[in-house]
Image (cartoon, rainbow, N blue to C red; front, side, top):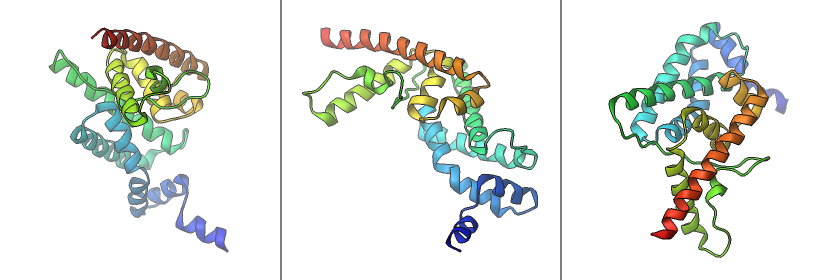
Length: 205
């Protein structure tokens, strides 16, 4: 009985999509409630601007409303939403790049399991004040990520920021799992080189 009540109160994404297709618009409201924080957070980490992140989130959920009736479930709803956020952010960045020569859109990194995560690339080691060091390291990573190309920045934010699995990233980007891993390895290597130069410059200063 408890399990049945839990299923009623917390329907799966598939159930919500089916209800929407049957005319239940409250299902769309539930999907928005379920994903709004995640969409905003991802957009903010891409754009590093609160207002633009909110606009991207609005655009994403408008696109979701228009497309949900034809959603076939070839990929998970969460994967599809991530893909739409990434595409909207890329379009926004491209638009801004065309309008200005100096673009500052920092991101931040987090964990991984088979290579050095982006955040740790700027770590100087133990012995420093944890809070101050973490703040400085994250600032270095944000600055360094500005020097990565779009492909490298995308793979870093999906894996090290959003902590998505390789298979889901592959679905979002439309590439093979092995391609995701090789791109991530190259992106982290590039980031490490940029960080190394910036740390050296900071030490000189």
